[in-house]
Structures are given as structure tokens and as C-alpha cells.
Length: 178
Image (tube, rainbow, N blue to C red):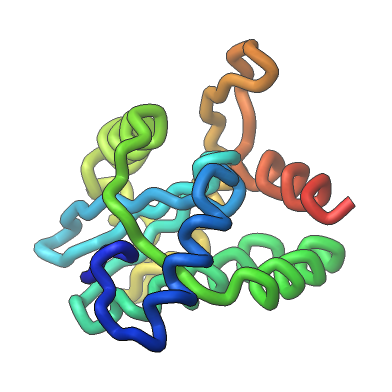
């Protein structure tokens, strides 16, 4: 996967660099990813910097990497499928921010959150067995549960608070479009 600053295509490079520079530093627009393995399959754990909302993608192939942004969008629509306001805001969000870029993850807070979720909550992948129904892993249920029922800590206004990532992301997205 080519990092934004290393793209050589003269047509795509300006768009990529403009998007990268405009969105860098806006934690609502930044996501971090970590690779882990479940049952000998590559999985991606993707975490939003602002809310710690996490999407787990299972059995990812190298050819799937260009579609990771689409997968995130699909799971977000599934997580908020019962909230019409959030569905409308997500449509607007993805219409305005329709390109996904990946750079080296250096945010130590997010790296720690990804490591913690993988080792403690996902039990290094073993927890995923609980979501297998009739031989099929239900990643929609997994991602809903991670974001709506799993409390995480986050510093908000200088204070450590316990939050549900889905609630925090919804609040931040609603404030973003006020």
C-alpha cells in the first residue's frame, strides 16, 4: 500500500496530498488500523481517533485494502441503522469525505487503544468465536457490540471518562454538522 506522500501518479497525487493535508489533525476524520490474526486469517481492526469507534474486518486479503474505506462506511451504516439522523449525517459525511488514505500510525494513544481492544476485549481473536452462527462469523453483530456495549476510557476536556464509542462518534458527528 502506497503512503500518500509516495504516490507518483501526476493526476492523483495533487488530490491525495490536498485531502491528506486538509484532514490531517482533524481527529474525527483520522482512523488507525492494526493487523491481527483470527483462525489463520488476516483481520483489520480500525479505530477512529476522536471517538475510539472500532470496526473489525475479518479475512482481509491484500486486494481488499483498496476497499477498506467502503467497508468502514458499510459497517457504520449498519451500526447506526436504527438512527435516521445518524444515517443522514453519515451519507453527508461520506459524500464530503469520499477518499480513504492511509499513512503510518504514530498516535500512541490509538495504538494503545487498538492493542487493548485486541488483547483484552477480543481476547487476541478468541472472542470472535462467540459470533459464529451456523458456520458464519457475524461481523455486523460483533461491530455493533464492540461499539454499543463495550465501555472504553477516553480523555474528554482533560478528564478520563468511560464512553461507548458509538455514542461518542454520534455526538461528535452531530457537532461537526451543527
